Length: 141
Image 1 (cartoon, rainbow, N blue to C red):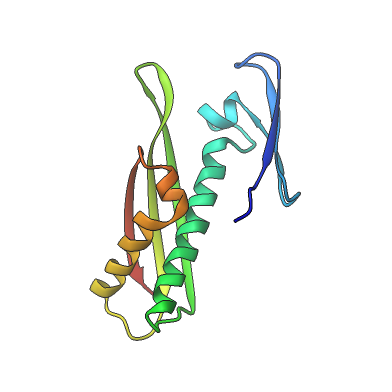
Image 2: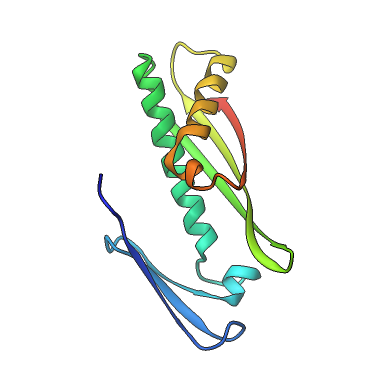
């Protein structure tokens, strides 16, 4: 299995500084700041990138599980909302909310929920976020 890398550079103090984050593949480079992370400023932030990773990982895990059971999905569309809160005065990722809509033949809502729960607990990013509350809402499209 490969090892992936990304990088970040920060200049200045926390409140007024700024930085950039880059994916090792070159597919993304974005600016970030205190405002983009802890307020509603422009730019990206680590939590947004974790949310993208979680949505992508979960979608692949769910598609794999469905396919292995001969229910190849037409599509799996997933969003993730990652929350950062102050815990004991320290910024902490506390929650990731997954929402997925799946277009697949031959399943009812209860069966989809079983596959989705398996993907939620089994995808690599969910496992990396083991100390974080992960919720899931799954529906058929």
